[in-house]
Image (tube, rainbow, N blue to C red; front, side, top):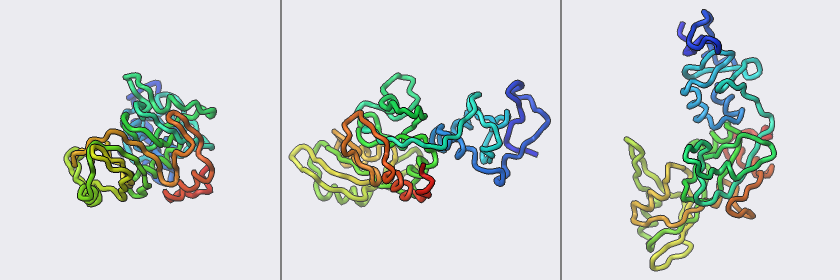
Length: 278
């Protein structure tokens, strides 16, 4: 029987023990990537990447592929040899990311990361929900709640994100119509239509335009790419809101915990039970 799990022990990596474990049985409990995400190791997608790297073991046995289910109350789950700890209290932080700061937690170049700006008393292992590129600023949600992060970034939930943008050039009504209709952007081998849900011109000068734009999708550098296709290089881009969250009261580099009502609204928007938020 092939289980997709390597029956090796930590003391004898790669050497079968003669025991096989069927972790493909969904009745065992929860999907392993969800358990890892709940332990604050990142989003479900990044936890799947940990599994593909071969650094996750359950009861001493290497996880080779997915799907797989575990019992977090009974199984000993380790990542790079360290046992994960199930957190009962989660941390939710809103950061005003300054321009020049990167969102990734792993940067071999030693640049300033968003996580470097947050000295949270909980010592939680926070990670960013979604991305803001290095040249952009604004609202960035940081958490150790992998389930909420996965919901907020999944296209099916389409949480609105509001941006204020300054571009070089004068944006006319015909350009606005094209942005609303959508522009095809290539992502590797495929091209998909990207569009703005709402767009408002805040100020229009001869050589630059300031606008507010709302998206319900978050493709890589989407706004910059859309506007560049129309011949309007972005000079400044700031995310000012995410769902019901907004940057009011924060300056660049500052952060604060989400309030109970803010967290409840986010969880409602993603279909999660608000009673289980903390």
